[in-house]
Amino acid sequence: MEKTLALDTLSALAHDIRLDVFRCLVQAGPEGMPAGEIATALDIRPNTLSNNLNILSATGLVRSAREGRSIRYFAEMEAMAALLGFLLRDCCGGRAELCQPVLDQIACNC
Image 1: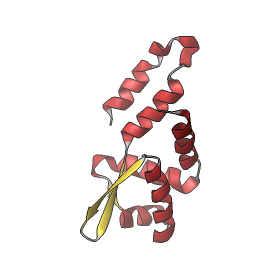
Image 2: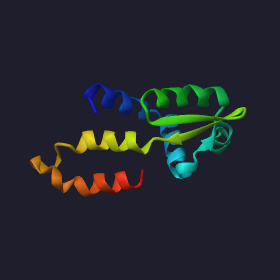
Image 3: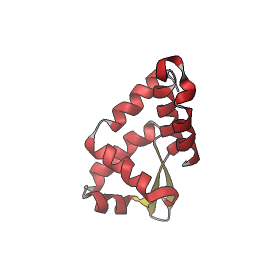
């Protein structure tokens, strides 16, 4: 992950609604959630949700799939793992292997 994408991704998550949406999708797991269910679960107006989902999608944190008239959204855990990998790459005083178990665990949960 490049620094610019990391900054864009962190910026996308640095908003209360977008963070709540991403966490909601993480909790939904691999089945994801239709947009209407996300809006209901978080008590967000559909147009507000749509704008925030577009921002999350632009950074790769969320993907969507059309299901008839509905759109189902999914958390992209690989993108989150890439962000965390970027943040932890040079951790632990130059001993990145100390952080590797954390990254491996995230990758397993994708």
